[in-house]
Amino acid sequence: MIYVLLPAYNEERSLSALLPKINHVFKTLKKDYRLFVCNDGSRDHTGEILKEFCGKMPLEILTHKINRGLGETSRDLFEMAAELSHPDDVIIRMDCDDTHEPKFFSDLFTKLDQGFDVVIASRFQPGGGQKGLSVYKAFVSLCANIFMKIIFPIRGVREYSCGFRAYRAKVVKTAIDIFGNNFIQLKGLGFTCTLEKLIRLKMLGAKFTEIPFTLRYDQKKSKSKMVGSITTFGYFTLAIFYYWPWGGWRTGYRKKIREYLKKTCAE
Image 1 (cartoon, rainbow, N blue to C red):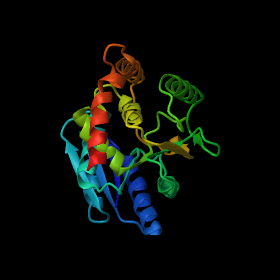
Image 2 (image 1 turned 90 degrees about the vertical axis):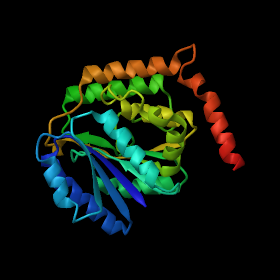
Image 3 (image 1 turned 180 degrees about the vertical axis):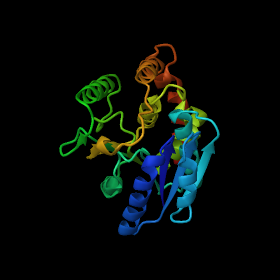
Image 4 (image 1 turned 180 degrees about the horizontal axis):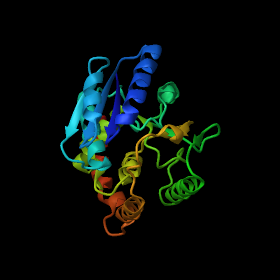
């Protein structure tokens, strides 16, 4: 089973384009899937549109009555998928604004079948790119990814800020078993959660790779939800938490991770 996770906030103009494409790709691939969408306190017609699609595809809706942000929304979606999935299942997280094309699902699955735990849709792989992004935003995004590559080097990863990824369910379930609610700890710091998940899975020894994809910012109809100052602050906070010399994440969780993996192997 494949679980697709979509955080949605004021996406009434994007859902009608994105959801049929997701359904069409899975029908073409002849794969079973379940789609979980969290309506994060939308003030437009996102909720009504989602209800219309419930009878047309295997869609389940989580609802936040007030907007809680991407961190809490991602946490709820991943915890739900981890609880319902089997270790061999696949979890895909993508954006709800129609900038991530479902046609790349097949490439993600191929890499998972090769033994990787996390596969990232990357603009920075040969053949990848982006459309519709201003020169300024493209430059800022590139600088941010270079910064993250230097501070958090992960073998096989060049794309740190794109949330379009496929995960082996086993590694997500393990992460939530170990970290619990702190799988996404910096919930209130904007889009920091996108990076934090990578760091958590790196700590577990997950195997990462990427596929080339094109970010279709030219198809984006909704306003950007990212607040640059908050997310930038979150990146620096994450670096401090990870590298803090007196009990940072690297040392603080090391024993707990070892004990968990040892217990799992014994079973």
